[in-house]
Each structure stands twice: as C-alpha cells, then as structure tokens.
Image (cartoon, rainbow, N blue to C red):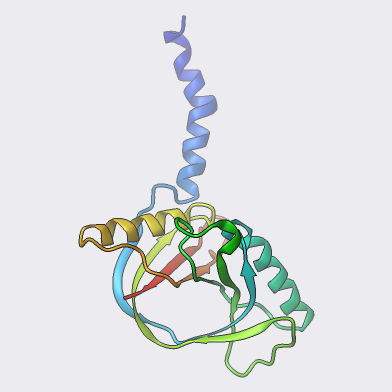
Length: 176
C-alpha cells in the first residue's frame, strides 16, 4: 500500500517544496572573481548584535531615508566580525543603502565611504534568505583550497530583482 501512494505524496508535498527552492535560487551557484570594487558612498545605521537582525535595521534605515525625502539605493551591509567566532552580542555592522554623492543626510543616520580596493567577490542570484549562505560557502570553499579563510570586513550589496519573478543578486566582497 505504501508503494502505491508515493507518487501523490511527491506531487502534493515534495514537488512544491523543490519548485519554491528552485524559484528562490536555491540551486544557483556563486561565481568567484578577483576584481577591484568601489568606491561606495553609503548611508547607514550602526548595528551591534546578532547579524540576524540586519533586515530589521535595513527597514528602519529605509524608513528614515524616506522620512527625509530620499529614495534608498541598493541595500548594503558591512560586516566587521566573523559570526563563526564572534559572540552574537558583539557582532558589529554598518547597515544601510548606497547613496549618490552630495546627498545630505540628517541624524540619526550616518554617511560612510569605502574606497576602491582589490577584493575577492562572490556573486549569486537568489532570494535574500538563501543568497548569503551560498555566497559565503563559495568563498570558504574557494579559499580553503589555498589554506586561507574568510577575512573581514566583508561588504554585502543586494540588488533586488526587477520583477516578482526575478530574484535579486547578492555580491559579497572580501578584502584580498
């Protein structure tokens, strides 16, 4: 009896999960290249604590920008501590949005600049829920072959997709 019922089970439960995972970019691979990235001008809020709270901070920064009449650019996060070795309460990041030069920002938001610099870049097209783990795993695997590990700070820039059917692209830049 169990053998006859496996096909409806697959259609009803497993297939939808696999299709959603595929749609979110779960099967996409990250590409790794050495390049020069930047310069970047960005607006941010300082975050100290669990990196899992970054999306909440991102929303607050976007709301503060809109309150000042400024449209947010691409989301950016600069992670200063390795979450594998730093306690969650001590993790530090700048969370915000890319900004055009010359735009005036009011407190409590801050403005930062990142100069052009050589980086190892991981890029993946996937949902923001899946993209970071894919990008960082690709960086880890790439560096492991030469006996290296991920170095901080990393810069994450997520460019959202142009439609509901298109996932965005996450770029993680690690200093060389």
